[in-house]
Length: 228
Ligand code: CA
Image (cartoon, rainbow, N blue to C red; front, top):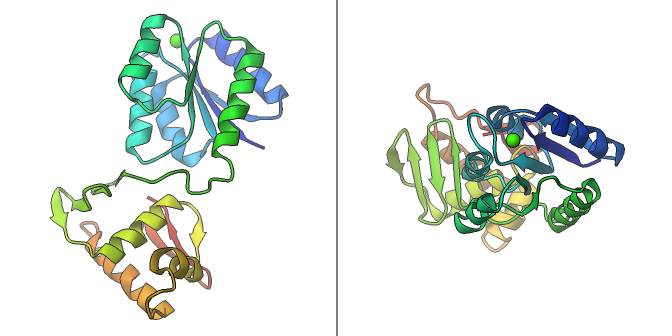
């Protein structure tokens, strides 16, 4: 069952959307503010977000931009009230996947949601991650730069590839076999010990002030999991 996060401050619209989408076989979480949406986007891991633009506090455009800055590629379908907002969507490159002008037809909304979900399903890695942030760490894969507490940290090309693969599969357990295939490509003479050494180095370089790197977890007998 696909999970939809609905972000809409107008109560009646929010309730109608939640009821309708729930009745169409989606698992729906509905919230009234951008702040709540940002909190939920990681923990609830929705498959798609229906995002109203005009919200009190952080507006929909800001919310979408912040979601993208976190490296999340969750499809976002905007609800817009006026043409002016559509200009912003197309002009500012906020990472919107689609939009509907309010009052939106519910059947049209459902159709757009299904199209967006089809586009992303079967694409496990959901496009390349370009930048990613957690706690005090910021990674820019386009410039190959990693900053920990504002300080540039040197990562080898392999460590960077390894980090990228873990981030692209965040929340999931990645086996050493997968790492061998996707990061090392079976080309080098590597053993699981090589992988463990790289993970160890990566953890050391990305460690927090306590000298720990809890975002890269070892899952006994299975592999590793990135949870940042
Ligand atoms: Ca609104």
